[in-house]
Image (cartoon, rainbow, N blue to C red):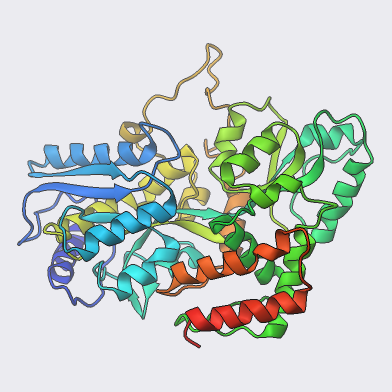
Length: 463
């Protein structure tokens, strides 16, 4: 039996039973026979905003799948619904819809931190393990798809913290080397900032670096990165979501976070900054270094002159982000929905996501020079009369973003997970709130703050 037909049979058998076991695998386009029991109609995909634009790559991938369905004579069509609001608001909308038993959504695009919560609550279906048990899927990224020994989602697009920098600032500081290939320690970055602070002819410059420390998920991400980079590499929970940290470990982690956000090096506005504010401060030249996500690589290249922007790995460990696709438990088209997920997360689709500015989840997107985004998804890029792309994003010889193979892929392979727990919402709210005094006018010492944080985390997480 051909592999694609075999996979379709496995998907149907597994997904039409709510308590299916795992198996199968894939990369097909879902043009085989429709799984028996699926109700013809729209497969509704609920997702947050696509950062690649109004007619972004996610929508173009869905359109390409629909064209294949139409050519195969199928009665199924996929439809993307973008949820409004912040990530927390989107999570609330999805929880409300799925907990009500509504079949309005067939596929849900979940932040990687939400997968344990939705899986433990029975809101999404188990999926064939082979969709994730593939050496082509980046190791730490594949780990976000499981909960309690089963696969409940498939990595769609990933994310990881990176360090952006302005070469024009480094040149004005008299540095002959403006291509930074990665930092071994935070001290290296501090030394560079010390040099920059001695200059008085960098227009608009105020402090060395900025990040996202406002009272939301950005503060949690920065804290987890500091904890993971501290001596011994501090993790807060085990694989089952149980709290495992000690006061002594928290003290070391808080000390690392305090050092990273210290006044001599950090733009004061960082304490109130989110992704948009920190990006604007960096673009305006108020700071030389910026911790941010891969999608801003393309965004910044739209406005920065050629050769002015650089990007490298963060010192220490960076946090893994991203979104995973899951089949809603109440879907009446679960088999076909899983075939859609297989297409959206296949090798060619992941190459399309990488080309558009996302972090792909598959190694092949970064390393296989023969792999290309299909023309019906890539479209015709807008170009200047000289033939240059309008986004001006540097690309390598295989037309990938120039930093993808040398910076982005290694960062993803080394990335640290945030705590994986069905109680992640309570965890991140607690961590964000308890670390707030660190960024106030009279912060407590590390040990005092650690004891307060430890007591609070013990109240909200099993231990």
